[in-house]
Structures are given as structure tokens and as C-alpha cells.
Amino acid sequence: MDHIAILRKDWKLLPKILSGGKTINPEFFNFKIDSKTSNIIMIYSIDDDLDVLESVKFLKNNLNNVQCVEFKDKGHFVLNSLKTEEFPELLSLILE
Figure 1: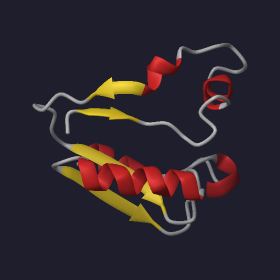
Figure 2 (figure 1 turned 45 degrees about the vertical axis):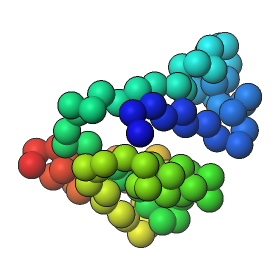
Figure 3 (figure 1 turned 90 degrees about the vertical axis):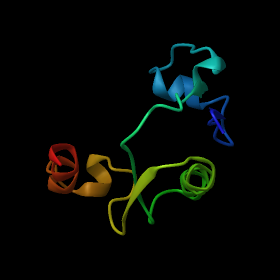
Figure 4 (figure 1 turned 120 degrees about the horizontal axis):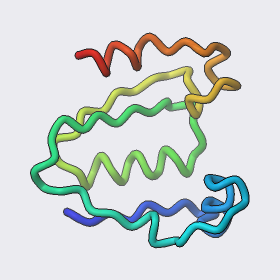
């Protein structure tokens, strides 16, 4: 699969959330991943929202050569979930 559209169930709200209330074209969420792309690392946490985990499952099943890194207690990777501004695991992945 070389074309993926990622839409959440609340896709009408998501563009406004991401843009701080400004309108974003829904086509923004339709994108292609070049077949020559390599070294894709997808990180997720099993305590994230169900719709996010559904997207993770979809991507894991439809993308080739993706390294998945699962966390158990990072939520949505925001300050409220992490309880810190530090994320050494991400830094380690970047520096590999």
C-alpha cells in the first residue's frame, strides 16, 4: 500500500484542533509514503486513546518495514501524560 489516509472518527474536529481553530483542508490528511522511504519508526503507547490505537493497528498491518516501539505508560506523549518535559527514550531513538 503506497497511499494512506489517516482520519480519526472526529475528523471534522481534528483540523481545527491541530490548527488552533483555523481551517485546514481535509486533504491534508491524505498522503503518500514513497516506496523508497526507509527507517520509519512509529512510537505509540498502549494507554493512548482507542482511536489512536486503531490507527496504529491499521498502520502496522499496512506498512512494510516499519519499526514499532511500544510504550506502556506514555499516553499521548504530551506533558499531561508524560508528567515531565524529558523523553530520553525518544532521544535514544533519534540518535541511533
